[in-house]
Amino acid sequence: MAPAPFVRSRFFFDWTLLVPALTLSLLGILTMSTFGQGASLAPRQLLWLLISLGVYLGLSTVDMSFMRRTSVVMALYLASFALLGLLLLLAHPVMGARAWFSLGPISFQPADLAKLALIALLAKYLSRRHVEIGDYRHIIVSGAYALTLTLLILVEPDMGNAIIFGTLWLGMMLVSGISKKHLAVLGLLGLVVASALWFGGLKPYQRARIVSFVNPASDIHGSGYNAYQAKIAVGSGELLGKGIGYGTQSKLRFLPEYQTDFIFAAFAEEWGFIGILLLLLVYALLFARLAQIAQEAATNFDAFFTLGVLILFAAHVAIHASISLGLLPVTGTTIPFMSSGGSHLVLEFAALGIVTSLARHGRGAVRDISANEYLGGS
Image (cartoon, rainbow, N blue to C red):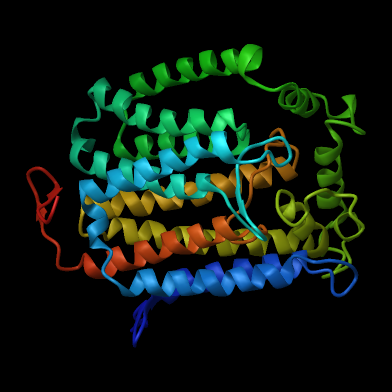
């Protein structure tokens, strides 16, 4: 008989979630390590990993079923909205974007909390109305919740996270059963919004990145430099890679931001095609476990929340990897568990902790079969 994923001791954890997440985190730390040849973010990231593990164990151990309450979901959403608004008033620009609160050596990106808030809000909204998703009003209302946060992200400006928010909303609408007709309308609206952004919403450097994506050779020493170096790094890894610590594009700093925005390319250079396949396999194991938990969820909220976490992680992986492979314009997007940074790593382990807790404490929950609705506290 297969071992139970939930380990009972002083703490509760799902090893089928925790092991892949830890593996990815350690691979990221190994990739960003310079092995004594210059400054490295690896020691700091290891500290953030320990903190994130504590957050996961804490959240997975306590009963997080209160997350199903409307008041809690709205409080989390409004807090995220307020923090994103304060960014525009108080934060100092970093690389041209007001995206971080800096408290000495510690930086916090409210967009990470906002992603969790949007997942919780959409999970609550869709858990009650997914059987009525054919009504366009529910698409408009849920879209307004997502668009409000997305616009604040765009003003920073942070195109990468704005795309993630849009993808997260669209993904959750798809799993809720949106009709093909409404999906076609959304596609047309997307084209209109993209056109408006191109002619009036994007910064000049963002348009230059898109032009460089269409024609990479147009400016390889300017706006196309990052994408060009990323593709060199990925291609030079060939089948087996150059070896851990021997990535010349990353370690010699030809590849900018290789510890964060281009860590996939740095990993590919050192581990090669075989290493990339193994990396994607680890992600696949994590995603498969999340899908299984969602399928076995006791309440609609639990199922939608878990699927939201899965969609969030999958979107980050797909966009980050595509940027490194030259399939998408450079937008500065991290990859889950691997990229350097504290706030996103804590958020990712926190999301897994909430999923674990909801799965464990949802076993005794009751469903109303007729309305497919949780009968516990609202």
